[in-house]
Length: 83
Image (tube, rainbow, N blue to C red; front, side):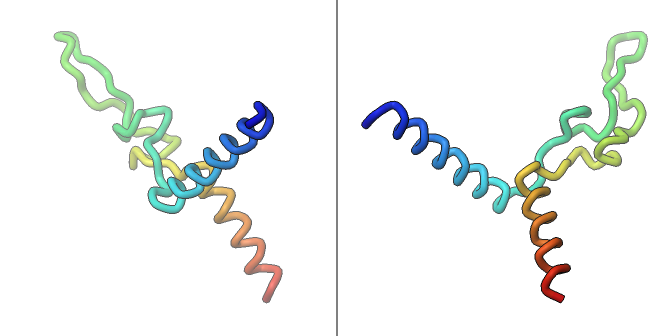
C-alpha cells in the first residue's frame, strides 16, 4: 500500500470514528471549566472551592461537539429548504 493510500484510508477511518462518536455522545466536557461547571478556586488553606459559574457552558459542564453542531446546522438548513 502506498503512503498516499494509507493516509487517505487513515483519514477516512478517523472521520467515520468521529462521526460515530458524535452520534453516540453528542456532548463533551467544557474546555474552559473541564466539566466542573464553575471555576475551581482555593481558599486560604488550599482547599478547592467552587468559584463563579462557567459562562461558556452555562454551568452545565457540557458542550456540544463540533461535528454534532455541524450536523444540526445542516439538518436545520435542509428542513427549512424543503418546507
